[in-house]
Length: 267
Image (cartoon, rainbow, N blue to C red; front, side, top):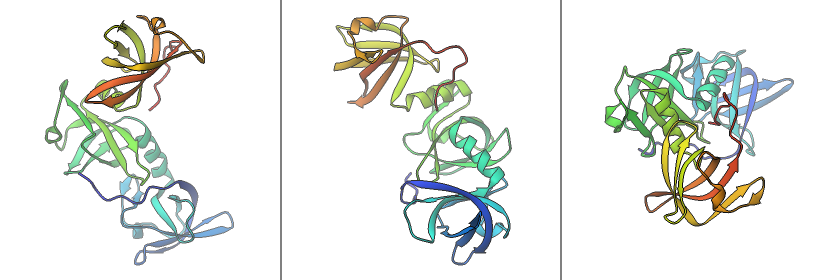
């Protein structure tokens, strides 16, 4: 499942008024203040209006638009994605947070859902790294069907496409699966066996993780190196994790204060 993407480079975002659209050459001109700039919109760019994918010629001259484009290129600047202002605000939300929705379409490499909150339609890339859980058990991609209610955890790619890092039938499961895809995990120490170099945690997302500890492993507290003996049951930590020979191995632990109730995990 390897769909084509635009070249990943640093991007910039501009909001302005559309003053020209050429659907044949796929170029547009956008005015921001007194300055006009020309943009090229490749076939692979994300183009949305009314919280739905659309064709470039759906945009009328005079419309307010937001474009995200490749930095450092001469005009016409290459567009990664383009949308009306209201859709851009919605797109920003669903690209950053777990979204509840109804499955509209499933393909070999993507899932499209209708967002329950604002009824927009969002397409997510699906890869072999996408984690899926249905009815409390790990599931295959074949288990995801149209009309299912799901929660999707996103990851914005440089191309403007959004990958589904997790798909689940409950928000709690989507939170756990997203957390497992990240290089760090925070939570409370349940047990530590220094001799076996084994760590058990209850994570911020409510997951229970059994992790191996690298040798050596850096332990930090208040900006200083400390002994592993300070990693005790009940202590709040952030563990930095790498995959090694099929195992999750912790190579750095930071001891910190437990976050206050209501503090949200970073996406």
